[in-house]
Image 1 (tube, one colour):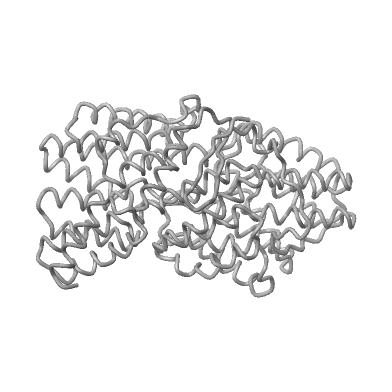
Image 2: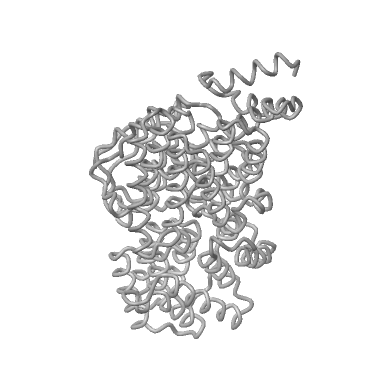
Length: 541
């Protein structure tokens, strides 16, 4: 196993390496005494020794520690070969409702587990119903699309809740199923609110249940709802401190609310736990969020170390969604958030050996950064080439019926094309394209795994309006963006600059003051901070 050492200037040493197959880690996590994963009591007909292991496995499952959960459920089945629910758990560990559809190898392992579960025949109707529910997801996986099967599983779990109203585990899994089928275009958040209502009822009876706190965070991981999950965010890491994902998840809400120091603390802990358990997936996922938070607080030196580590990797065998997204996002954010346009224009796709053709939406981040950088540093030919590359990626995703990511790449394409038009002096076309990107982004939501878009489209629209000397309208766009994404460094600076340009000193002072507070831990290298301090000094603020 190749390891790359990365030292973060907080005395925490992190390793990002090449890991083959997260379901069979090179260094498997050992079940430690006094392990803290939360409290789960999922009654089954399995033997007492198997039942104890089963509860632990379900706790792992509720914290999305899927690779460890799969091992733990296999251990349950070995302890009690007649325990059909052990095989149910293996199949459940291979379905990740909020992440990405199962890979072919995962579908194969799930099919094997379902064969054993059906052959074992659970002795109770309730357990047979659980087995049938997950079977509805895997049935005809080679013929039926992922969403249709996810909806079938959701309906099956709803029936279990109706049949066994006292079964709180059924309620928790049903809530997760609802989150898994929620549409990113549904701005009423119907599924999310329904899930939260279910979970809050269970919370009263089981305050230390890991799934309850975890799924409440996901239920409210939206700008309009995030403050409702702050208590759950601060509790989840205490409920299951031995889970890397439980340490990371609070940062979803911290980011939504612009609480960057808390997000940094959360992801430092999660990355350390991922390293401890040799889980590169958890580690690099936390580092993705960590880099984003460092950049919002102008801690560019620390962000650079993370970015450099990405480019120092000489190979990663973990070809999965979280890793691909982080590899594309970290370098793109590092250049664009610091407004280093020439650096962005020259950006290279990291880890050349990675199968980027399977993760076009992640590779698109690099071409988005390239195009913006080239347009804003005077190289329209390079910008056009990157826009064309984004268009090709968007087309391939649309043809593959990956509608969500096709839309996200289209937002990037529109934004990149807008800045290309602006560089070519086509004012009206540039504004039309940039507004289209912002409006399209408003109709959807970020993927549950990600910190958010590489650069918010409405923030980019505000920047364009500033350059086109329309500060009044620019201010409206920046303020609209900040309502959705509070305390973003460049959003605050743009709003402050726009307010200054329209002569609103009070509003400019407010935004500049927020910006300087945000940069208190910064390296002092951002010119925006210097401009803010000069303005505040001139105006006695």
